Length: 307
Length: 293
Image (spheres, rainbow over the protein chains, first blue to last red):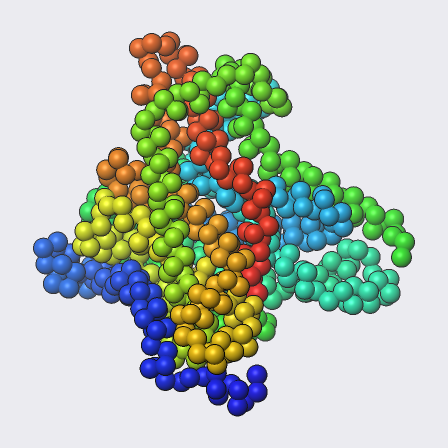
């Protein structure tokens, strides 16, 4: 667009675009009420919440609730589980979609390619409840397919869901099953953007297929990988409430109690609002710091970052 | 150029790996399908694994006879339709102004909105807010707090910016169109693909949503399907459906298994039927979103 036309297009004044602001106003109200008011409400983490005085009227108590959390019997268990599951998920869940995308990209037969994609994307649309339900059906010690297979092969029945040692692996690998296909789409998009001339040049130089994947395709999607890695690291501590909560039971608690479920139990069920808010805030702040740190490192060592 | 032997070996390995991955992903869903229409006794003995055996619809019969569950189905349908409509309106109301370079304050608004993706007040302050607003146990709590997804809004905004030529809008302004007219007569009619994608994303989200209902609803009359599903699949609460006085214990245990398989299928039926047709739209949605990275 040329300069003068751009000027004509820009009406500048608020008056000219008043209807756009009118259209936008419900959005502002929504974000203020449902996102920024809760952020303001986070101050109850530093107060002793008294229901009839409200959030603002309750007395300040400083870091009392944080100290209680750090000193609590469960602190190390929760931290170990939250970080353990988060890291496990990152190490397994990050490279697999990349690998899948690199393989799908090599398929030239359109039909087979579409079939693989259709199949691998599908589990993404199953709800968490159904997903956990299926995990429990397949792993059931009485009627589960896995245990039937184990006993058919002469092994011993394993009570997967009540064995703390199994919890993290079940959680992470079922997550891989559900999301690897969907997460690979973004890499496939990036692979489609790799310059075919680079491949031709590599072929002329006598590069084998694996060498071309390694030296052309992977560098081609590196920026996408960096951005997604940052996002994944930023959510290490944000191990999802829904699935953990559904998979949790009294017997696997030792391995399954994470920050989010702890906040739910003591806050929503136990009505210890201030304490739970403090635990939740601690979690958000660490996550946010992680995100900022990784983003900064990424900007230093490579050219791509979130912002 | 002819392929070298090494290249061909690599290609075969990739094919084999992808076939394996497809089987591993597809089989559990396939199994649930055949198990749901087989005699539960055969399923529990491990005799059903490739083909249904002794067709029996007992799981489905028990499910359909349960009025609470059917009510839940209806509730979910209502939340999905109403919620998706609200989502669509709100997403357009956010994305269109932010896509316009002459909308003053767009940078500030965008930053404030995107910030909420990375930092939030958390479960407890949000819960207290919903409580103070008197929204606990209401229909509204299922649609208003999730009225807008920042991610979807960014997808739509990117689409408006990249796929709707500025020149068309400009020409319309020259002809005296107002902002609203440009939006409803020009921009939205040209936005079919992104609107379809938004409807799909949001509808699936509402259909599967469970967290808000768990936290904010205690009235069983308002429960969505997923909460009943949790009782059946995860907590194994099926006393009403499995008549213990009538059947033997072994019998009712088997029926309980059949009910679980059937429950997974009827919950996902709309999705399983529509999925092959809708798949390309979903991918398009991710692609549009991926442009920005």
